[in-house]
Length: 199
Ligand SMILES: [Fe+2]
Ligand SMILES: [Fe+2]
Image: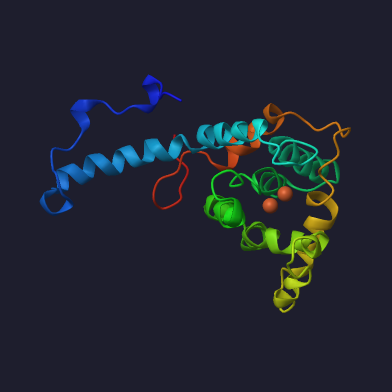
């Protein structure tokens, strides 16, 4: 993939230092402005990353993007709110970046944008999904029981049971990725370092 012009920095706005030790306040004033630009592009990057999943089946009946879309569509059609739908959509976005630690990847992405409950759900969904199949791969399907004391146990177990573990049906008519783009752009709207939305 090549970066288009909009994603490339202008050379005249780059610092001249070769190490942080010699950087100046002026350098950092400029860099901190540009990090807001980078943050403003996160929604586009998330959509691109989801697109990568379209070509990856990994042995499953549906590709990884369809699984994400199906999970989100099932949540939406069940009346869940936008934040929950967002989490359903991106819960496996890390599948091709860190397959064995993919839940943590998604959790780190959504953490600034969602509630503690939804962050916990995304972070722990992998272990809770194990309830449905880990006996087949030599792991303990009841590993989720280590989290019985969590106030989010039932919430996360419900997500996996109702939306995630059932989202492998090739005949299910999921909404397309474009349908969910407004939600991604809403929750990952441009923000400054304090979390305030900016434009
Ligand atoms: Fe997952
Ligand atoms: Fe999943």
